[in-house]
Image 1 (cartoon, rainbow, N blue to C red):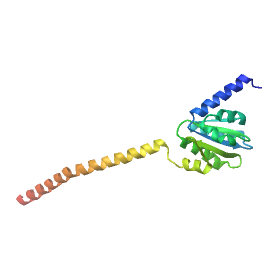
Image 2 (image 1 turned 30 degrees about the horizontal axis):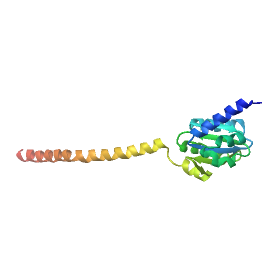
Image 3 (image 1 turned 90 degrees about the vertical axis):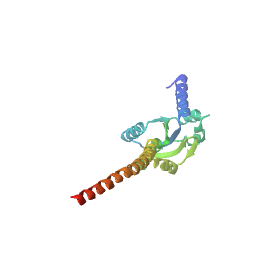
Length: 177
């Protein structure tokens, strides 16, 4: 049995996590086996997400005064929270992927992304977006592509001039021979 101090520490820790989080997904599960739970935890860990099973009353108290307070009504039944501190795309991809693969044991309750409540269809839409790194890479490619084209066009003029001079030289050389 936990003491009052231990419960307060747990409450403070969860409150701090929720304050620092940019997004969180509240999920439920039923008849989940240990291997499936480990699979979910590994996928979330790879995505840089914190995941923990929480008591509903503890979660409701921790959510007070945070953007996650709007989701307090969803803390019913067996509940777990996946908390992401970075961009929500990685968290959404991991939850969406596991939810589709295991609909019989895993249920999505609600998500909070940057202070807004989102449904499963919204999470799937977010999951389909490219990550921030992918977007930066695409933009850099487009910028670099234009620069390469400009260099090609600018170098074509002297190259073409050299070809014309060589052809004229070959013609004059052929006439004298």
